[in-house]
Length: 184
Image (tube, rainbow, N blue to C red; front, top):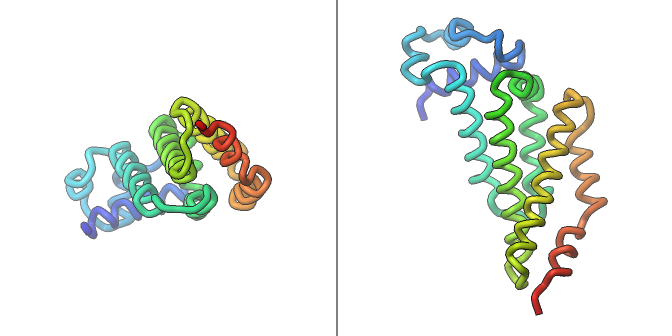
């Protein structure tokens, strides 16, 4: 673990909680973590590179940490908790010029979560691959759509409660859709 790099990332997250992404400068970051500009540039080319590094690092962490789960909510809960913990920072990133990077990683996490769940559920049954892929895309779109709605509503509602309620309301429907397509 590189402590200086971690200090730079922590400073950036802290500053993102306080102000919009486009208002954060390298000077703000180095002043906050008490390193010089050269140290910052040794680790990161610029602030967009720092942001990209942080998003990719977190995406990889979520994928590695929550790769085995019994239901979709088992993976959704830690994601929602992380997002809730960093609400202002995530909203600042979402509203920045780097929204595309953020959205790409949101799609990656959603696709991974849904694919892993569907593959787990279908491990004991035979289903047409095209139908399985269609369901994966469908549920990925729902997951991304809920996240985007929450962001567009400026995170004004309790996403964790909403996610749990959605999973309870639609519980078993994905599995039933898969079972409806079992090859005999």
